[in-house]
Length: 236
Image (cartoon, rainbow, N blue to C red):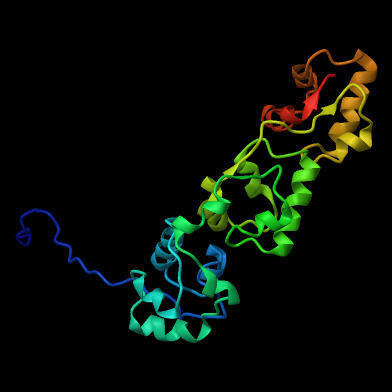
């Protein structure tokens, strides 16, 4: 005889939960007001702690003293004791002012700002401010705020912190596609040497451009690339 079969039913599973395990924290000297997301992760901080630090700064929060780190959800006494010896504020930490005293840098106009003006933005030092001005001049001016984040060295967390304080004028320097030489076109950050050469050859074959949209007849030029360069080109 066959052994009696057990009545069919739902299998019972035991639920178990364990806290996610993270590697040991590997701290190095850092300024909590300026450290990038990538560097926070390099220290092996738990992802939720990194996120809370970035959100705190993006809302305008400033770390004025070391134990301000204890305000961050997830940084308990044990983690703070590990990080505390490595917190290194710059000298200017003593002159941080409340947000209502920062009106002097509100609505900073990017196309007329000097390198010194840009240094007033928290997280922008002398080297980076000069790089911003150089990139702006190569472009012919910023025509929208988001281009600011294209500058090498601008961390997204830094950009998000002050982008609402920025503005741009509508005027940018335009390149005349009917008179520009190959090197002049290729000097623009959005135009490759190959594209510049093709534009010149197309102009020679078909005559002067009557409107900028005719550039879309160039097969290698993608629509998104055209939209980027369009504000910087003219036919006059």
